Structures are given as C-alpha cells and as structure tokens.
Image (cartoon, rainbow, N blue to C red; front, side, top):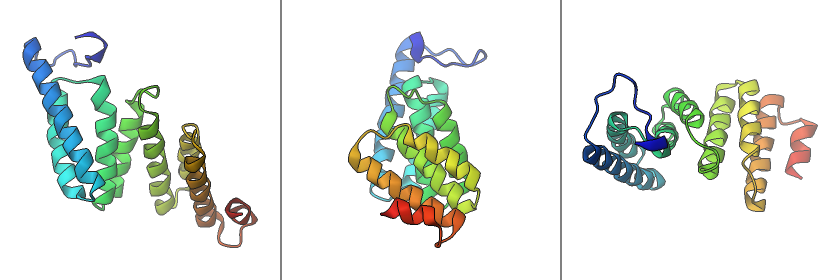
Length: 169
C-alpha cells in the first residue's frame, strides 16, 4: 500500500486489485466533478464528489483526500452552501501536501478568505489571505491577490480606508 495508504485501523481490508480499482474510480469521478465545477454545474459536482468521497473512504489516497475536500468545498460554495464549504476547504487544506498541490492550496486559502470576508470574520479572513500569499509565485497571480487584499481591506475598514486606496493604486 505504501505512503498512499491512509486506512483507519478498523477499516475493511480490500484485496489489492480492488484497492487500485476503487482508487481509480474515485480519481475518475474527481476529474468529472472538476469539469462540472469548472462549467458552473456546482450541484452536479457536489453529487459526483460525494460519490468519489465514498470510494476514497474505502481505499484512501493521499493524492486525492485533500484535493477532493478542497474541490468539494469550492463546489459547495458555488452551490450556495458557504458554511459547509468552509468546513470542507479547511479539512482539505490540512490533508493536502503543499509540495504537490500549490495551486489548489492557493485557491483554497483564497476561497476561505473570501467566505470569511462575507461572514465578517476579518481576523480569519486575514489569516487565510496571508496563507494564500505564501503560495503566490506568478506576477499575474500577485495582481489578483493584491486586488483581493484591497477588497478585504474595504470590507474590514470601509471605503475611506487609506490602506485600500494604496493597495488599489
């Protein structure tokens, strides 16, 4: 099973071939849901990801567990369920290896910051935005990030804030 095995001690032990097949089916469902989410079919993506999640629980994969939760959080947010989305995003962030999934983690932290801004929890918003900033490497991503910071500042300090004005210049 190797380092990709996260099975709970009391989990059912599946034959090796079934483990591989189950993981492969979960991965295919993840990709299908990613495309559904990308085309704004959020409710379909949630349903597909719930199927992938059930399969991943039978044969857990390090490469899928965290990203699956983060994508589910994104789809739930798009489907109008920000509280559940926030829960899934945070769960996914903690289970996702940063070295392999930098872009997904940057996006997840950014979405957490946006949800926290909408909820009015500006301390949590700032912490999530700061975490997002750790993953920004490209200039075009930096520009979008600074714009998000300006929106955060406007939300937390009001439109007359000198900080938001300086960020937008």
